[in-house]
Amino acid sequence: MSLSKAQDLIRLARLAATRRIGISLEEICEEFDVAHRTAQRMTEALETVFTGVEWQDGPDRRRRWRVSDPMLDRLRPREETAIEALEIAGRSALVEGRVRHAKALSDLREGLLSRLAPRDALRTEADAEAVLTAMGSVTKPGPRVNLKPAVLDEIIEALRGPFRLRLRYGEPDAPERTIEPHGLLLGHRSYLVARQPSRGETILSFRTDRIHAAQVLDESFAMADGFSLGEYAAKSFGVYQDPAQYGEVVWRFTPDAAARAAEFRFHPTQMLEPMDDGSLVVRFHAAGWLEMAWHLYQWGDKVEVVAPEELRTMVEGYRRQDFNALP
Image (tube, rainbow, N blue to C red):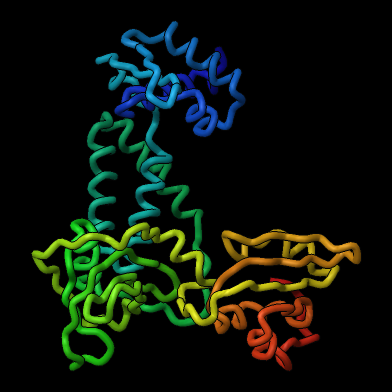
Protein backbone atom coordinates (compact mmCIF):
# COMPACT_ATOMS: atom_id res chain seq x y z
CA MET A 1 0.00 0.00 0.00
CA SER A 2 1.38 3.43 -0.96
CA LEU A 3 1.94 6.13 1.65
CA SER A 4 -0.91 8.27 0.33
CA LYS A 5 -3.33 5.33 0.39
CA ALA A 6 -2.28 4.50 3.95
CA GLN A 7 -2.92 8.09 4.98
CA ASP A 8 -6.34 8.00 3.33
CA LEU A 9 -7.20 4.74 5.10
CA ILE A 10 -6.25 6.19 8.51
CA ARG A 11 -8.33 9.28 7.77
CA LEU A 12 -11.27 7.10 6.71
CA ALA A 13 -11.00 5.11 9.95
CA ARG A 14 -11.06 8.29 12.00
CA LEU A 15 -14.09 9.62 10.08
CA ALA A 16 -15.91 6.32 10.58
CA ALA A 17 -15.12 6.46 14.30
CA THR A 18 -16.13 10.07 14.91
CA ARG A 19 -19.34 10.25 12.89
CA ARG A 20 -22.25 9.13 15.03
CA ILE A 21 -24.03 7.17 12.27
CA GLY A 22 -20.89 6.20 10.37
CA ILE A 23 -19.88 7.02 6.81
CA SER A 24 -21.47 5.90 3.53
CA LEU A 25 -19.95 5.16 0.13
CA GLU A 26 -21.40 8.39 -1.24
CA GLU A 27 -19.79 10.39 1.58
CA ILE A 28 -16.44 8.63 0.99
CA CYS A 29 -16.61 9.59 -2.69
CA GLU A 30 -17.20 13.22 -1.69
CA GLU A 31 -14.60 13.36 1.11
CA PHE A 32 -11.78 11.74 -0.90
CA ASP A 33 -12.86 12.77 -4.42
CA VAL A 34 -12.84 9.15 -5.65
CA ALA A 35 -15.07 6.98 -7.80
CA HIS A 36 -17.71 4.65 -6.34
CA ARG A 37 -15.61 1.52 -6.99
CA THR A 38 -12.60 3.07 -5.24
CA ALA A 39 -14.79 3.88 -2.24
CA GLN A 40 -15.86 0.23 -2.11
CA ARG A 41 -12.22 -0.90 -2.11
CA MET A 42 -11.50 1.55 0.72
CA THR A 43 -14.26 0.05 2.89
CA GLU A 44 -12.92 -3.45 2.14
CA ALA A 45 -9.45 -2.33 3.29
CA LEU A 46 -11.03 -0.74 6.36
CA GLU A 47 -12.60 -4.06 7.37
CA THR A 48 -9.30 -5.87 6.75
CA VAL A 49 -6.94 -3.53 8.62
CA PHE A 50 -9.00 -2.36 11.62
CA THR A 51 -10.85 -4.19 14.36
CA GLY A 52 -14.27 -3.11 15.56
CA VAL A 53 -15.55 -2.31 12.06
CA GLU A 54 -19.27 -2.74 11.63
CA TRP A 55 -21.80 -1.64 9.04
CA GLN A 56 -25.52 -1.07 9.03
CA ASP A 57 -28.11 -0.25 6.37
CA GLY A 58 -30.07 2.89 7.27
CA PRO A 59 -33.65 3.95 6.51
CA ASP A 60 -32.37 5.60 3.33
CA ARG A 61 -31.03 2.18 2.20
CA ARG A 62 -27.47 3.46 2.37
CA ARG A 63 -24.88 1.30 4.07
CA ARG A 64 -22.72 3.11 6.62
CA TRP A 65 -19.50 1.93 8.23
CA ARG A 66 -18.58 2.57 11.85
CA VAL A 67 -15.31 1.90 13.69
CA SER A 68 -15.26 1.29 17.44
CA ASP A 69 -11.56 0.56 17.87
CA PRO A 70 -10.27 1.90 21.23
CA MET A 71 -6.71 1.98 19.82
CA LEU A 72 -7.67 4.35 17.01
CA ASP A 73 -7.01 7.47 19.08
CA ARG A 74 -3.32 6.58 19.13
CA LEU A 75 -3.13 6.93 15.35
CA ARG A 76 -2.56 10.66 15.20
CA PRO A 77 -1.41 12.13 11.89
CA ARG A 78 0.74 15.25 11.94
CA GLU A 79 -1.33 18.31 12.79
CA GLU A 80 0.31 21.10 10.74
CA THR A 81 -2.67 21.62 8.44
CA ALA A 82 -5.18 21.65 11.30
CA ILE A 83 -3.02 24.12 13.28
CA GLU A 84 -2.70 26.36 10.21
CA ALA A 85 -6.43 26.23 9.48
CA LEU A 86 -7.38 27.07 13.08
CA GLU A 87 -4.87 29.95 13.20
CA ILE A 88 -6.12 31.43 9.90
CA ALA A 89 -9.75 31.07 10.99
CA GLY A 90 -8.95 32.65 14.36
CA ARG A 91 -7.23 35.64 12.77
CA SER A 92 -10.17 36.17 10.42
CA ALA A 93 -12.63 36.00 13.32
CA LEU A 94 -10.59 38.58 15.25
CA VAL A 95 -10.52 40.97 12.28
CA GLU A 96 -14.30 40.65 11.91
CA GLY A 97 -14.83 41.38 15.61
CA ARG A 98 -15.96 37.85 16.47
CA VAL A 99 -13.91 37.76 19.66
CA ARG A 100 -15.75 34.77 21.15
CA HIS A 101 -15.12 32.66 18.05
CA ALA A 102 -11.47 33.75 17.91
CA LYS A 103 -10.99 32.64 21.53
CA ALA A 104 -12.68 29.28 20.88
CA LEU A 105 -10.49 28.65 17.82
CA SER A 106 -7.38 29.55 19.80
CA ASP A 107 -8.40 27.10 22.54
CA LEU A 108 -8.88 24.33 19.96
CA ARG A 109 -5.44 25.08 18.51
CA GLU A 110 -3.81 24.90 21.95
CA GLY A 111 -5.70 21.70 22.69
CA LEU A 112 -4.32 20.03 19.57
CA LEU A 113 -0.79 21.09 20.47
CA SER A 114 -1.14 19.89 24.07
CA ARG A 115 -1.91 16.35 22.92
CA LEU A 116 1.36 16.10 21.02
CA ALA A 117 4.71 15.10 22.42
CA PRO A 118 6.87 18.19 23.17
CA ARG A 119 9.18 17.50 20.23
CA ASP A 120 6.27 17.01 17.81
CA ALA A 121 4.52 20.11 19.15
CA LEU A 122 7.58 22.29 18.55
CA ARG A 123 8.03 20.93 15.04
CA THR A 124 4.34 21.34 14.22
CA GLU A 125 4.26 24.92 15.49
CA ALA A 126 7.41 25.78 13.54
CA ASP A 127 6.05 24.26 10.31
CA ALA A 128 2.68 25.95 10.71
CA GLU A 129 4.28 29.31 11.47
CA ALA A 130 6.46 29.02 8.35
CA VAL A 131 3.38 28.55 6.18
CA LEU A 132 1.45 31.36 7.89
CA THR A 133 4.39 33.75 7.52
CA ALA A 134 4.54 32.98 3.79
CA MET A 135 0.80 33.54 3.31
CA GLY A 136 0.03 37.21 2.90
CA SER A 137 -3.46 38.66 2.73
CA VAL A 138 -4.39 41.16 0.07
CA THR A 139 -5.94 44.30 1.51
CA LYS A 140 -9.09 45.21 -0.36
CA PRO A 141 -9.50 48.94 -0.98
CA GLY A 142 -12.33 50.77 0.69
CA PRO A 143 -13.57 51.17 4.24
CA ARG A 144 -13.99 48.22 6.56
CA VAL A 145 -17.07 48.25 8.72
CA ASN A 146 -16.03 47.57 12.30
CA LEU A 147 -18.40 45.39 14.28
CA LYS A 148 -18.79 45.97 18.00
CA PRO A 149 -17.65 42.74 19.75
CA ALA A 150 -20.15 43.17 22.59
CA VAL A 151 -23.04 43.59 20.12
CA LEU A 152 -21.87 40.63 18.02
CA ASP A 153 -21.66 38.42 21.11
CA GLU A 154 -25.26 39.26 22.02
CA ILE A 155 -26.42 38.54 18.46
CA ILE A 156 -24.70 35.14 18.41
CA GLU A 157 -26.16 34.26 21.82
CA ALA A 158 -29.64 35.23 20.59
CA LEU A 159 -29.25 33.08 17.47
CA ARG A 160 -28.40 30.05 19.62
CA GLY A 161 -31.79 30.12 21.35
CA PRO A 162 -33.29 31.48 19.35
CA PHE A 163 -34.11 34.32 21.73
CA ARG A 164 -35.57 37.75 21.15
CA LEU A 165 -33.11 40.62 21.07
CA ARG A 166 -33.60 44.15 22.36
CA LEU A 167 -31.48 46.68 20.50
CA ARG A 168 -30.94 50.36 19.84
CA TYR A 169 -30.69 50.84 16.09
CA GLY A 170 -30.00 53.80 13.83
CA GLU A 171 -29.22 56.87 15.91
CA PRO A 172 -27.50 56.47 19.31
CA ASP A 173 -30.56 57.91 21.09
CA ALA A 174 -33.14 55.98 19.03
CA PRO A 175 -35.86 54.19 21.00
CA GLU A 176 -35.25 50.52 21.75
CA ARG A 177 -36.93 47.88 19.64
CA THR A 178 -37.40 44.13 20.07
CA ILE A 179 -36.60 41.82 17.17
CA GLU A 180 -36.50 38.09 16.45
CA PRO A 181 -33.13 37.24 14.84
CA HIS A 182 -33.12 34.66 12.02
CA GLY A 183 -29.54 34.91 10.77
CA LEU A 184 -26.43 36.98 10.19
CA LEU A 185 -25.03 37.88 6.77
CA LEU A 186 -21.32 38.71 6.91
CA GLY A 187 -19.70 40.75 4.14
CA HIS A 188 -18.09 44.12 3.45
CA ARG A 189 -21.15 45.36 5.31
CA SER A 190 -22.89 42.87 7.58
CA TYR A 191 -26.62 42.57 8.18
CA LEU A 192 -28.68 40.99 10.94
CA VAL A 193 -31.68 39.26 9.37
CA ALA A 194 -34.65 39.43 11.70
CA ARG A 195 -38.37 39.86 12.15
CA GLN A 196 -39.68 42.83 14.13
CA PRO A 197 -43.04 41.75 15.60
CA SER A 198 -44.29 45.32 15.86
CA ARG A 199 -43.90 45.61 12.06
CA GLY A 200 -45.54 42.31 11.15
CA GLU A 201 -44.18 39.06 9.75
CA THR A 202 -41.84 40.57 7.14
CA ILE A 203 -38.19 39.52 7.38
CA LEU A 204 -36.01 42.65 7.58
CA SER A 205 -32.29 43.43 7.34
CA PHE A 206 -30.51 45.53 9.98
CA ARG A 207 -27.01 46.89 9.36
CA THR A 208 -24.89 45.57 12.22
CA ASP A 209 -22.66 48.66 12.25
CA ARG A 210 -25.75 50.75 13.08
CA ILE A 211 -26.67 48.64 16.12
CA HIS A 212 -25.44 50.69 19.07
CA ALA A 213 -26.49 48.32 21.86
CA ALA A 214 -28.03 44.87 22.10
CA GLN A 215 -29.35 42.68 24.89
CA VAL A 216 -30.53 39.08 24.73
CA LEU A 217 -33.97 38.59 26.31
CA ASP A 218 -35.10 35.44 28.07
CA GLU A 219 -37.89 35.07 25.52
CA SER A 220 -37.82 32.34 22.87
CA PHE A 221 -39.80 32.51 19.63
CA ALA A 222 -40.71 30.37 16.63
CA MET A 223 -38.76 30.96 13.45
CA ALA A 224 -40.72 32.00 10.36
CA ASP A 225 -42.18 28.97 8.58
CA GLY A 226 -39.97 27.76 5.76
CA PHE A 227 -37.31 30.42 6.29
CA SER A 228 -33.89 29.67 4.80
CA LEU A 229 -31.00 32.09 5.22
CA GLY A 230 -29.42 30.77 2.02
CA GLU A 231 -32.58 31.42 0.00
CA TYR A 232 -33.00 34.84 1.60
CA ALA A 233 -29.41 35.82 0.77
CA ALA A 234 -29.81 34.62 -2.82
CA LYS A 235 -32.50 37.24 -3.41
CA SER A 236 -29.83 39.95 -3.45
CA PHE A 237 -26.74 40.53 -5.58
CA GLY A 238 -24.71 41.62 -2.55
CA VAL A 239 -26.31 41.94 0.86
CA TYR A 240 -28.90 44.69 0.36
CA GLN A 241 -32.51 43.54 0.14
CA ASP A 242 -35.25 45.39 -1.71
CA PRO A 243 -38.29 43.30 -2.75
CA ALA A 244 -39.33 46.04 -5.20
CA GLN A 245 -36.10 45.49 -7.17
CA TYR A 246 -36.22 41.70 -7.24
CA GLY A 247 -36.48 40.23 -10.72
CA GLU A 248 -34.57 38.84 -13.67
CA VAL A 249 -31.15 40.34 -14.38
CA VAL A 250 -29.56 39.90 -17.82
CA TRP A 251 -26.04 41.01 -18.75
CA ARG A 252 -24.25 40.53 -22.08
CA PHE A 253 -20.44 40.47 -22.07
CA THR A 254 -18.55 41.25 -25.29
CA PRO A 255 -16.63 38.46 -27.06
CA ASP A 256 -13.25 39.68 -25.76
CA ALA A 257 -14.56 39.63 -22.16
CA ALA A 258 -16.66 36.45 -22.39
CA ALA A 259 -13.96 34.02 -21.28
CA ARG A 260 -13.08 36.14 -18.25
CA ALA A 261 -16.76 36.65 -17.31
CA ALA A 262 -17.35 32.89 -17.50
CA GLU A 263 -14.87 32.46 -14.62
CA PHE A 264 -17.01 34.63 -12.32
CA ARG A 265 -19.78 33.41 -10.06
CA PHE A 266 -21.91 36.53 -10.10
CA HIS A 267 -24.82 34.84 -8.33
CA PRO A 268 -25.65 31.32 -7.03
CA THR A 269 -28.56 30.99 -9.49
CA GLN A 270 -26.78 32.30 -12.58
CA MET A 271 -27.22 30.74 -16.02
CA LEU A 272 -24.53 31.24 -18.69
CA GLU A 273 -25.46 31.36 -22.38
CA PRO A 274 -22.58 31.45 -24.90
CA MET A 275 -23.78 33.25 -28.03
CA ASP A 276 -22.94 32.57 -31.68
CA ASP A 277 -20.99 35.84 -31.96
CA GLY A 278 -18.70 34.85 -29.06
CA SER A 279 -20.40 37.02 -26.46
CA LEU A 280 -21.74 35.65 -23.17
CA VAL A 281 -25.17 36.26 -21.65
CA VAL A 282 -25.51 35.90 -17.87
CA ARG A 283 -28.97 35.54 -16.28
CA PHE A 284 -30.03 35.38 -12.64
CA HIS A 285 -32.76 36.67 -10.31
CA ALA A 286 -31.79 39.17 -7.60
CA ALA A 287 -32.25 42.66 -6.17
CA GLY A 288 -29.69 45.33 -5.35
CA TRP A 289 -29.21 47.52 -8.42
CA LEU A 290 -26.75 49.87 -6.74
CA GLU A 291 -24.40 47.04 -5.78
CA MET A 292 -24.72 45.67 -9.32
CA ALA A 293 -23.80 49.08 -10.75
CA TRP A 294 -20.71 49.26 -8.51
CA HIS A 295 -19.55 45.91 -9.86
CA LEU A 296 -20.45 46.55 -13.50
CA TYR A 297 -18.38 49.75 -13.55
CA GLN A 298 -15.21 47.62 -13.34
CA TRP A 299 -16.02 46.04 -16.72
CA GLY A 300 -16.14 49.37 -18.55
CA ASP A 301 -17.76 49.02 -21.98
CA LYS A 302 -17.25 45.23 -22.01
CA VAL A 303 -20.70 44.54 -20.58
CA GLU A 304 -24.21 45.63 -21.54
CA VAL A 305 -27.22 45.54 -19.21
CA VAL A 306 -30.12 43.97 -21.09
CA ALA A 307 -32.48 43.89 -18.08
CA PRO A 308 -33.86 45.33 -15.91
CA GLU A 309 -34.40 48.66 -17.60
CA GLU A 310 -33.89 50.58 -14.34
CA LEU A 311 -30.39 49.13 -13.93
CA ARG A 312 -29.64 49.79 -17.60
CA THR A 313 -30.51 53.44 -17.03
CA MET A 314 -28.29 53.62 -13.91
CA VAL A 315 -25.15 52.49 -15.75
CA GLU A 316 -25.83 54.32 -19.01
CA GLY A 317 -23.13 56.90 -19.59
CA TYR A 318 -20.68 55.30 -17.14
CA ARG A 319 -19.32 52.51 -19.38
CA ARG A 320 -15.71 53.61 -19.88
CA GLN A 321 -13.61 52.59 -22.87
CA ASP A 322 -10.16 53.29 -21.40
CA PHE A 323 -9.86 50.47 -18.86
CA ASN A 324 -6.86 48.40 -19.97
CA ALA A 325 -7.63 45.32 -17.84
CA LEU A 326 -10.62 43.19 -16.89
CA PRO A 327 -11.60 42.49 -13.26
